[in-house]
Length: 225
Length: 225
DNA sequence: ACGAGCATGACACGCAGATGACACTTCTCT
DNA sequence: AGAGAAGTGTCATCTGCGTGTCATGCTCGT
Image 1: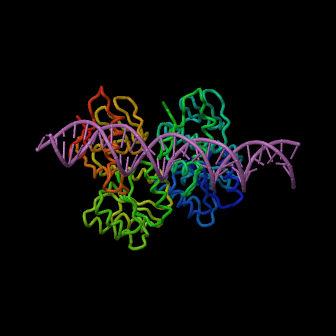
Image 2 (image 1 turned 45 degrees about the horizontal axis):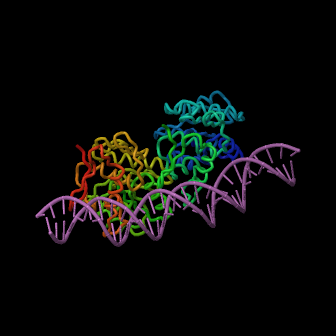
């Protein structure tokens, strides 16, 4: 799940980046309206977190323009301005939610989940992903196979989540790299292979059918039937 | 499904080559306008991916010239120039779609599928190819005959896909070489024969009618009735 | 029945993917 | 703050499968 964070203050953005990635999101950061706009039109983001008060342009203007061009991801506005007028303006001009700074992290996360749930595709509705005897609870960041809890690291969980969301479909290494690691072209890396290996060592069991299948020359699939 | 990728940057072209071939396309690469032009007039491509900014000639000029000469495959333009003017210019001069770099791979694939669908034969619509009791799911990369799953390798799958897309029509060895193997193989070879043989050993069954028929001196046909 | 064209089996090589070890970073707990 | 543990990415090595080539056997068409 990829988010766009638009925030010019360095400390805040660091904090957000960490907090969000700890909660399983992939983050792209923009420190000004220009890069934000470029990123927003390029990548497909599940949501945007926008801190008002950018150096080069008013955040609201940016959002209005994006939405006018068909940008559809929900926008969560962060702002120090707490007046009712400001809130109304923010929500009227394209914000889907408005959070006053300083805010509590749990609230931010909750509101974010709300936004994501609201315009998620039907299959995205729940916070639990189930594929055969595999179960991922996205809220609790817990995974289990056949009832047995799996002790997964952050990356492993993200990888498995991606596989689950695409269960039955083949996902290529490039897709995984882009969506799970969120990075651009990294010419020759085998991170994906290694993490698949580690994931397998936790997910697969000799007494249960194989879940993660390799499609040579293509990528991997998660069995869904 | 063969694509022509015109891109001079080595890293980018590597990335594209890999990402696209992972998704089942056959790729020919051109690093400059000259080779691009030669290839475009030779092979028949389902689509072209063009990165603007070639060393020897402006990509748009190239496209304009090709289209003027009756080149009809859709062109997807990749460019770092994101200004509205540039986009408009690109789309007006022969581009069928315009994607600003950096782009998200899923979007590129989606747009590509769109382009291919737009001027494809009616049978191209879905991700499932069906010919009698034979079924290919392109997304899952699964093939089955009469309900039984077939365990095909990458090349076998590509070959069978090509046969399916041309079911009922005779395809020659050189057509197969061109479309399935691309340009990376020498004329004097019997790879096709060998792979047809291997494919038959998996597809054909004594209790079911023959699917792959040999047309002596010409090529092969996939039975479609 | 003869030759060209195709089928078939064997083989060798290369490469994709699996695996283990290691270096480096980040987190955790005293 | 510092030691230890856990997490993550890179690299080197290993393995087996997939692939293309070749030699030989078979078959169809005339």
